[in-house]
Image (spheres, one colour):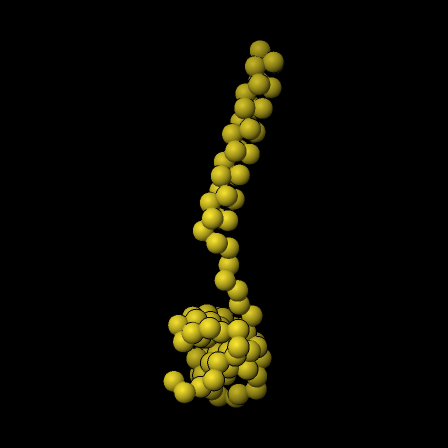
Length: 91
């Protein structure tokens, strides 16, 4: 692959991931960001990726995901304790 990637894309692997994700969107009916009549979704996705028209991000880190999960569990436990306390006062 001799194509030049946009500066934000740091590897061939990331390029393939971004282009494949965009191709999936196009196959599901997303509108193209470039005019390429009669082209396959993969070709359009690669062109859009090369022109830096595809938005992407790294997503949350595993630590952030775990922290959010723990916070949700703590909130659920607090709500359950509050509910039990309210029911106890009624009886």
